[in-house]
Image (cartoon, rainbow, N blue to C red; front, side):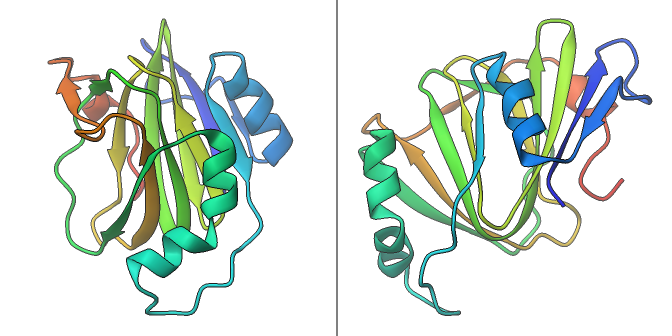
Length: 168
Protein backbone atom coordinates (compact mmCIF):
# COMPACT_ATOMS: atom_id res chain seq x y z
CA UNK A 1 0.00 0.00 0.00
CA UNK A 2 1.27 3.46 -0.88
CA UNK A 3 1.49 5.99 1.94
CA UNK A 4 3.12 9.15 3.16
CA UNK A 5 4.25 9.46 6.78
CA UNK A 6 5.12 12.96 7.97
CA UNK A 7 7.75 13.35 10.69
CA UNK A 8 9.33 16.33 12.39
CA UNK A 9 13.12 16.15 11.98
CA UNK A 10 13.53 16.00 15.76
CA UNK A 11 11.15 13.02 16.16
CA UNK A 12 12.13 10.28 13.68
CA UNK A 13 10.38 7.57 15.74
CA UNK A 14 6.86 8.95 15.64
CA UNK A 15 5.07 10.33 12.59
CA UNK A 16 2.77 13.33 13.00
CA UNK A 17 0.43 11.79 10.44
CA UNK A 18 0.19 8.86 8.06
CA UNK A 19 -1.94 9.08 4.92
CA UNK A 20 -2.92 6.16 2.69
CA UNK A 21 -5.50 7.56 0.25
CA UNK A 22 -4.00 8.64 -3.07
CA UNK A 23 -5.82 11.99 -2.98
CA UNK A 24 -4.56 12.74 0.55
CA UNK A 25 -0.99 11.75 -0.32
CA UNK A 26 -1.10 13.88 -3.47
CA UNK A 27 -2.51 16.99 -1.79
CA UNK A 28 -0.11 16.81 1.17
CA UNK A 29 2.94 16.47 -1.08
CA UNK A 30 1.65 19.10 -3.54
CA UNK A 31 1.90 21.69 -0.75
CA UNK A 32 5.67 21.32 -1.21
CA UNK A 33 5.77 21.08 -4.99
CA UNK A 34 6.04 17.28 -5.03
CA UNK A 35 3.73 15.48 -7.43
CA UNK A 36 2.20 12.10 -6.60
CA UNK A 37 -0.37 10.27 -8.66
CA UNK A 38 -1.48 6.82 -9.65
CA UNK A 39 -1.37 5.94 -13.34
CA UNK A 40 -3.38 3.22 -15.05
CA UNK A 41 -1.30 0.16 -15.88
CA UNK A 42 0.13 -0.04 -19.37
CA UNK A 43 0.06 -3.15 -21.57
CA UNK A 44 3.35 -4.65 -20.37
CA UNK A 45 4.12 -8.35 -20.25
CA UNK A 46 6.54 -9.83 -17.75
CA UNK A 47 10.07 -9.80 -19.14
CA UNK A 48 9.38 -6.91 -21.53
CA UNK A 49 12.37 -4.98 -22.85
CA UNK A 50 13.25 -1.51 -21.60
CA UNK A 51 12.06 -0.03 -24.91
CA UNK A 52 8.65 -1.72 -24.59
CA UNK A 53 8.22 -0.48 -21.01
CA UNK A 54 9.11 3.07 -21.98
CA UNK A 55 6.85 3.03 -25.03
CA UNK A 56 3.89 1.75 -22.96
CA UNK A 57 4.00 5.04 -21.02
CA UNK A 58 5.25 7.34 -23.80
CA UNK A 59 2.10 9.53 -23.92
CA UNK A 60 1.97 10.42 -20.21
CA UNK A 61 5.77 10.87 -20.13
CA UNK A 62 5.50 13.29 -23.05
CA UNK A 63 2.65 15.10 -21.26
CA UNK A 64 5.00 15.63 -18.29
CA UNK A 65 7.59 17.09 -20.65
CA UNK A 66 10.50 14.77 -19.91
CA UNK A 67 13.00 14.25 -22.70
CA UNK A 68 14.96 11.36 -21.16
CA UNK A 69 13.74 8.12 -19.62
CA UNK A 70 15.62 5.13 -18.29
CA UNK A 71 14.45 1.87 -16.79
CA UNK A 72 15.67 0.99 -13.30
CA UNK A 73 15.51 -2.73 -12.64
CA UNK A 74 16.47 -3.04 -9.01
CA UNK A 75 16.97 -6.61 -7.82
CA UNK A 76 20.27 -6.29 -5.96
CA UNK A 77 21.10 -4.35 -2.82
CA UNK A 78 20.91 -0.64 -3.47
CA UNK A 79 23.56 1.73 -2.06
CA UNK A 80 23.03 2.77 1.54
CA UNK A 81 20.49 5.51 2.12
CA UNK A 82 22.16 8.87 1.77
CA UNK A 83 20.55 12.26 1.47
CA UNK A 84 21.10 13.82 -1.94
CA UNK A 85 19.90 16.62 -4.17
CA UNK A 86 19.52 16.69 -7.93
CA UNK A 87 19.68 20.04 -9.65
CA UNK A 88 16.86 19.05 -12.02
CA UNK A 89 13.30 17.99 -11.35
CA UNK A 90 13.04 14.26 -11.92
CA UNK A 91 10.34 11.63 -11.71
CA UNK A 92 9.91 7.97 -10.90
CA UNK A 93 7.10 5.75 -12.14
CA UNK A 94 6.83 2.26 -10.64
CA UNK A 95 5.99 -0.50 -13.10
CA UNK A 96 6.51 -3.23 -10.50
CA UNK A 97 7.71 -3.62 -6.94
CA UNK A 98 8.14 -0.88 -4.39
CA UNK A 99 10.49 1.75 -3.05
CA UNK A 100 10.65 4.24 -0.21
CA UNK A 101 11.55 7.89 -0.66
CA UNK A 102 12.54 10.24 2.13
CA UNK A 103 11.93 13.91 1.32
CA UNK A 104 13.60 16.36 3.71
CA UNK A 105 11.73 19.64 3.39
CA UNK A 106 12.34 22.27 6.05
CA UNK A 107 11.66 20.94 9.53
CA UNK A 108 9.75 17.92 8.23
CA UNK A 109 10.58 14.61 6.59
CA UNK A 110 8.03 12.98 4.31
CA UNK A 111 8.50 9.23 3.96
CA UNK A 112 6.69 8.13 0.79
CA UNK A 113 6.18 4.46 -0.04
CA UNK A 114 5.61 3.98 -3.76
CA UNK A 115 4.42 0.81 -5.43
CA UNK A 116 3.21 -0.42 -8.80
CA UNK A 117 1.52 2.36 -10.85
CA UNK A 118 2.70 5.21 -8.56
CA UNK A 119 4.32 8.33 -9.98
CA UNK A 120 6.48 10.58 -7.80
CA UNK A 121 8.06 13.76 -9.14
CA UNK A 122 10.77 15.31 -6.97
CA UNK A 123 11.42 19.03 -7.55
CA UNK A 124 14.93 20.25 -8.29
CA UNK A 125 17.16 20.75 -5.25
CA UNK A 126 14.85 18.82 -2.90
CA UNK A 127 16.89 16.87 -0.36
CA UNK A 128 15.84 13.23 -0.61
CA UNK A 129 16.93 9.61 -0.39
CA UNK A 130 15.78 6.26 -1.70
CA UNK A 131 15.47 2.88 -0.02
CA UNK A 132 14.59 -0.38 -1.75
CA UNK A 133 14.98 -2.65 1.27
CA UNK A 134 17.19 -5.63 2.06
CA UNK A 135 15.67 -7.75 -0.73
CA UNK A 136 14.89 -5.18 -3.40
CA UNK A 137 12.42 -5.71 -6.18
CA UNK A 138 11.45 -2.73 -8.27
CA UNK A 139 11.10 -1.84 -11.91
CA UNK A 140 10.70 1.89 -12.39
CA UNK A 141 11.01 4.51 -15.06
CA UNK A 142 13.27 7.39 -14.05
CA UNK A 143 12.50 10.55 -16.00
CA UNK A 144 14.66 13.64 -16.34
CA UNK A 145 15.58 16.37 -18.81
CA UNK A 146 19.31 16.96 -18.53
CA UNK A 147 21.58 15.18 -20.99
CA UNK A 148 23.76 13.76 -18.21
CA UNK A 149 20.77 12.34 -16.35
CA UNK A 150 19.79 12.90 -12.78
CA UNK A 151 23.17 13.44 -11.18
CA UNK A 152 22.83 13.28 -7.39
CA UNK A 153 24.91 15.49 -5.13
CA UNK A 154 25.28 14.16 -1.58
CA UNK A 155 24.32 16.65 1.13
CA UNK A 156 26.61 15.17 3.84
CA UNK A 157 23.61 15.17 6.21
CA UNK A 158 23.20 11.81 7.99
CA UNK A 159 19.46 12.31 8.51
CA UNK A 160 18.43 9.45 6.19
CA UNK A 161 19.65 6.84 8.67
CA UNK A 162 17.47 8.27 11.45
CA UNK A 163 14.15 7.51 9.78
CA UNK A 164 12.45 4.17 9.07
CA UNK A 165 13.46 2.32 5.95
CA UNK A 166 11.37 0.12 3.68
CA UNK A 167 11.91 -2.96 5.83
CA UNK A 168 11.28 -1.23 9.19
